Amino acid sequence: MNELSTPQTTPSWRACKAAQQPSYPDAAALAAVTADLRTRPPLVFAGEVDALRRAMAKVERGEAFVLMGGDCAESFADNTANNIRAKLQTVLQMAAVLTYGASTPIVKIGRMAGQYAKPRSSDTETRDGLTLPAYRGDAVNDHAFTPQARTPDPTRMLDAYLRSGTTLNLIRSFTMGGYADLREVHSWNRGFTANPAYKRFEAFADEIDRAMRFMAAAGVDFDALRQVDFYAAHEALLLEYEDAMIREDSRSGRLYSTSAHLLWAGERTREPQDAHIALLAGVHNPVGVKIGPRTTPQEVLALVDRLNPQGDPGRLTLITRMGADRIRQALPPLIEAVQADGRPVSWVTDPMHGNTITTANGYKTRRFDTIMDEVRGFFEVHRAAGTHPGGIHVELTGDDVTECLGGGEHIDEATLARRYETLVDPRLNHQQSLEMAFEVAEMLSR
Ligand code: PEP
Ligand code: MN
Image (cartoon, rainbow, N blue to C red; front, side, top):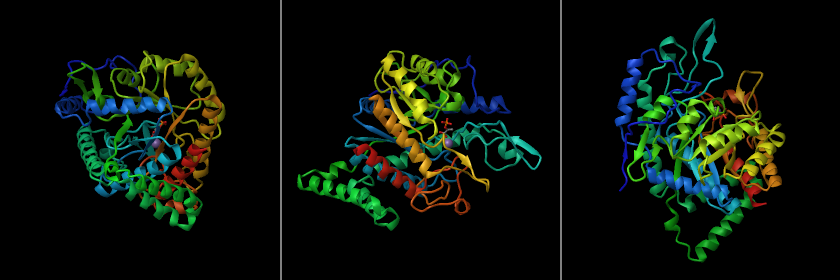
């Protein structure tokens, strides 16, 4: 049995430039929290992380497709059983549809159990003449607009750790205890396509029905399919937290991040020589990097050099977030550079972050059609290049929120006010998420 222990040294990111870090008023309090975190049990285990790396290697080869989904920012207040279950159910329903469309396994990854820290475009926020630190996620400070709430508090990292652990515990019991039963998940999807607004997907659901009857007739053991692998991922933003969660695997001597199976660096913290990439370079997990429309081929190759110098399979995922109007021009040169380089990457589309707009009535939102246009652009570009469109990364929730415009329910600007609940970016609601899954499944099956 391999053990994970607290290492003597962690990756040397401290000498590097570090963007987007909170300024804690009390250095001793911060040191006490990280010392405490270093003694805590890992949230994920090396064997699971290795399994995800093998799954990601299949994605690189076009033998599997990734679905990553969850909140932009998890919150402590929404860390409830119902919320977790609804998100998990949404991802499982999407995955069932995508499995049929792709005819390959779907690697299911929640933006869950640790997505508690956010990069912000400004360090401060001003309201009615009062300027306070920006909200940086529940692991850092509280969303309420008061000086006390907005002051970064390191003890919130302990709360984030514990909530991540209980979230993972619930996910593990749901996915191991039969909640992910394909027959059940399919029947939820039938409920969705029975809604007149989504009638156009009924034929596709009928096909899945027939496939399931065929499987049953051929003697497939559905009971053996009741358990699924479900992985957790979040943005590796808070360097002190991530550093404190690194453990050494006794068998291999390798360092693993044990805060999640997969970590990614955001568009704002992905400078190849900076601290976040240095930290990710030092752990054995599969890692992702978000890349926006201004990314150059040289930058992408520098990231490959830093994060996957040997070209190991399953290690690096490039999550493109270009914007629907730019992906068709911005992505091809990056793909070309990676192809010429030869080291493997998996390509995933985040069709959310390049398509954020603000409505006249002041809501930060995204249009469902624009999001789908970026996904279509992603497929077009990869098909033209002969590379694999490896997956989708989406901000979603299992609830009936009204944060993104459009979709079968035709959410309009006035409707946004009804249930706009996100603390940071707008999420697809349950129905919009399923609608996306059916549309992507159709793209995959072509
Ligand atoms: C995010 O995923 O919430 C995010 C901030 O994305 P990006 O780094 O791509 O802007
Ligand atoms: Mn976001």
